[in-house]
Length: 107
Image 1 (cartoon, rainbow, N blue to C red):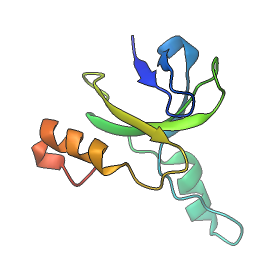
Image 2 (tube, rainbow, N blue to C red):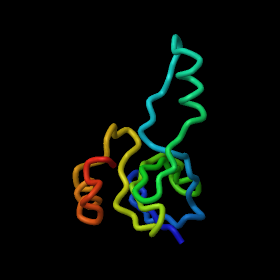
Image 3 (tube, rainbow, N blue to C red):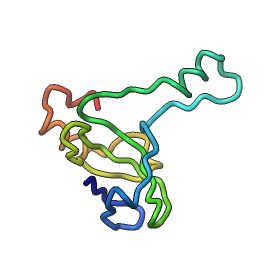
């Protein structure tokens, strides 16, 4: 079972306490964007095998959103960080680089 550390309340939460929110760090399209840009934002998602950056909500805890870096194949968690962060913290990127030296900068 997946277990993630909630950086908001500091609790290690089991998967049953969490709600997935999809891909993290998406560029939101607002008023004035083209129909094609808005369609891409709504429907186009990466679905990589391996390292993923995702949004999670501590639904049965503090209720706050946070981001997680994990491996979609092995379920290894590289770390979690607040949702207001624009890029993964360097320490998480370093963990990913140690496990996947071939894709260190692409996460």
